[in-house]
Length: 185
Length: 116
Image 1 (cartoon, one colour):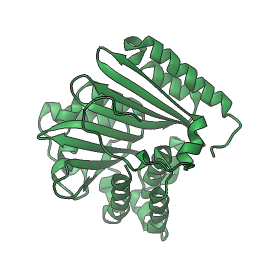
Image 2: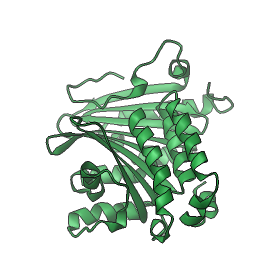
Image 3: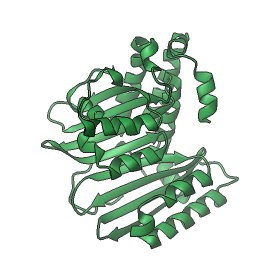
Image 4: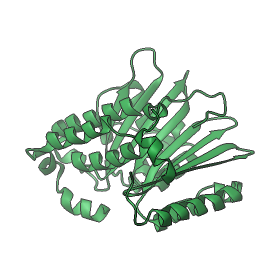
């Protein structure tokens, strides 16, 4: 299925230029609002990632007690082996993408972050090997006083995929998807 | 799902189900199993869905980070590969065997049946 998706994907610019791009995303978000259970939402995450122009997606929702993450939920639309390796290596504490999501609300292309520390690079390298060679980070925050934050991470195994143009329109769709996932889950 | 330890839990919309809701109607296609080890509690929820098998894995360690992973498998082979690499294979062998068995049941029982 992933191969077929790759063939159909083309460039991000082509994908987001489609006249019905936002309409198709709206349809996914609308069905998410009315989803009966988590399995339905997980399937819609997978579909939504494909519609916005990504091949892989992870939605992470986390709660912080003071500075440490105390609880973390992963909804995976990617190889689940990644998540197991990520948790086994204890990368949550050193994940620069999660750290970005905890303190920022603006969607960004992950490669624009400067990451020098070796332990932080480890999280990026693991993601790169598992379908996130190019990635977009879409943080979502609850209201003031809430300690729960979320991150929708959309990825492509093709290096430079999100850097090649189309990000402005892409983030409109990705943001809508991330907000509804945060609301639902 | 019962919160068995006093750790803060992330609320979710699906926790509140009216009688006769789609979630309740789909209970026949869902299995929950868990085991307590010296590391803490591990719980799996399996659900047969139109696209394959939906799996939730929740781990509540005696100390440290509580995690939930949710994912879907399109075919039995990919699920079995994931299952055999799970730490419960060695930490809780009985749970691992039960997991395989319940998943086999869901794959076969629902092979020709659509999710409600």
